[in-house]
Image 1 (cartoon, rainbow, N blue to C red):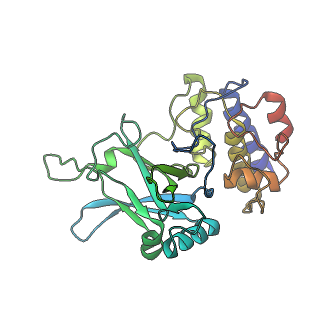
Image 2 (image 1 turned 180 degrees about the vertical axis):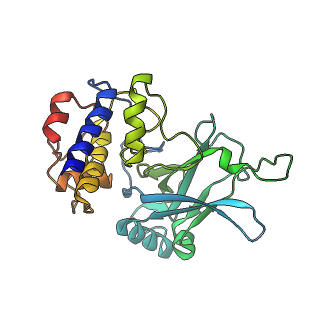
Length: 291
């Protein structure tokens, strides 16, 4: 019981670091190319449970092993397109690809030096291989060792399919939302915190109470989605139980499994019209109620 009370107080300390407000930037969807009338042949769920692990091949060359879960609906659509590119009447669609975005050091997404000019793989090939291997740009020090561990690499992914109207150019693109972000590397576990907060944050790191979505922006406002992730983490740490996501998904604007877990636990609710509004900022009143 004492441990549970301590963990709850620790989360409250973390929350007190964030400011609260009315809106936040929405960056949870890659760029699509949609006809003027908005007509698309299908929609795609986002990749789920993306993970990244640093490994070494038989020549001791480092690479990152990327894994993710492909929703059954995406598998079903891809199978139809492989069999018949014109399955959707009046449209010609290419099989679904997985775009894996990478980020490290001070570079933005996909802008740092890389051994690859393209970091995508077809859903069919991914299902066959079970993983995607990303091989980073190699920096060699004086001793000949690869300094990959001195950098911090982040990865995210999304699905896309190129398509066009039958007999016309293939110039449109259906996209899913982004997956979660997976980060690998040797760095301080959080950044952007005020000096007065570091002691409590160090305790939070020790107990595993800082989520990946907030670790690099500790003094920025916290969104409904980010708090839901934090609340689920607190629940699992204090109860030593694994939460399960609500199914089917009651929301049309998010597929984040942590949000769906928080909903099933009764921690969060929607804002109406089957929406959760994940990027809206939460406030102290809502936080106190959810805790």
